[in-house]
Length: 331
Image 1 (cartoon, rainbow, N blue to C red):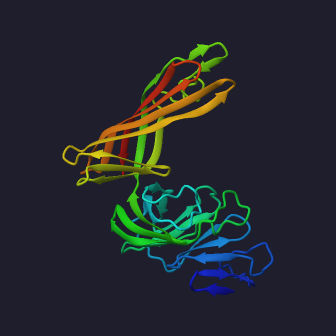
Image 2: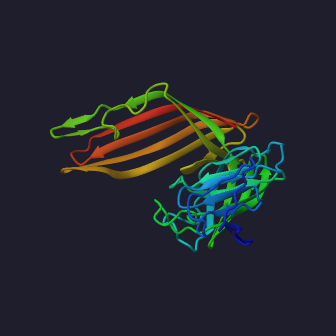
């Protein structure tokens, strides 16, 4: 084998198999330097085995502490770039918070996050020590073989920092000249239940019908429908802000520390959703949250309203759908 101490990459060349009952693994291809490639984490507790197929995550099985990590659980990372020199993804923007996939920390403090666009391949792997030190390798697109779906040019890098407390941490991200700060927050378990559905009737004209949503009049939600998810809430009493982050969005609203009241509104601009013959259809909408935060129990309760309004070029008529849900979040 060869081992690069800087990159912590182990390349295997020849294999000797022990048949005395020890656990092991084999590889079906020729035993060359292009066989298995292991990327070992900085703490030596996990490794990513890469070949021609999907990556395999290896976990160290000896010498680990039996005390459960105080950081075990689900975490929501929010990345804000401060500098971008490698535009490997055209959506990268400085100064704009971006939610990353949920990090699930196991009882030993280890975590592995698969690539959000190609889930067969690892994007991030690392651990949090009992003292709260997080060290991780950001693999970017480097573990994806040529020709893999959604393979880009995002380089490898690091994610490191210290946990502020049992529920949050402040980290630094660096990869190929792209630098940013990551706020890591223990996720809340969210339960939403549909309590009200209000849909305008469709507008019917010769040759075309205008519905209030893209489901062509079929109700997308019914009373009592329940949705479970993970999200992270952060409250800044001094600034009077509440930030809600999930895997695909981050929104900021107002927060009154004295009363606990929260208000968040997000507007979705009018855009073309369909062109059918000589008719163009448009849609716009909003998402609104009103509720409160109980700091003693770390619970958020409230109501959300999803509104969608469609219009067309036939005339000035519009149709609107609105779905109201109860909202409850707790760690």
